[in-house]
Length: 94
Image 1 (tube, rainbow, N blue to C red):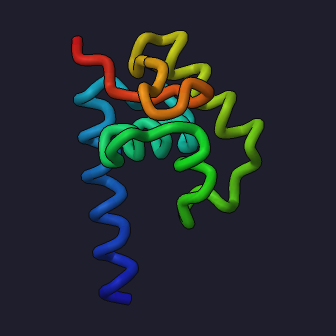
Image 2 (image 1 turned 180 degrees about the horizontal axis):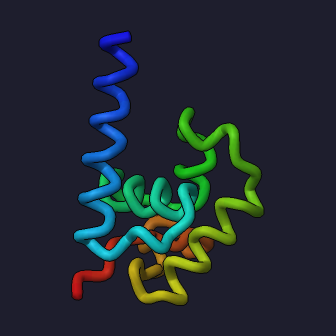
């Protein structure tokens, strides 16, 4: 039971941080995509879909989450210099 209590405390802390940062209105997948973009170097949709955590989500769900984050101006997309077909996602500093 101690592990479950600790898990709940972590969830509560995460919820507090998300509210403070203004990310509490995002869906769980949108939050996960945002965190991945902030964590991974040269993040793009292909890298997101190949990450073990995101295997439970469809490509369309991930694309929809990226679209929301782009439309809310939370992340930005720039064309990759290495592969013109790829868009590199980055956190949009405010």
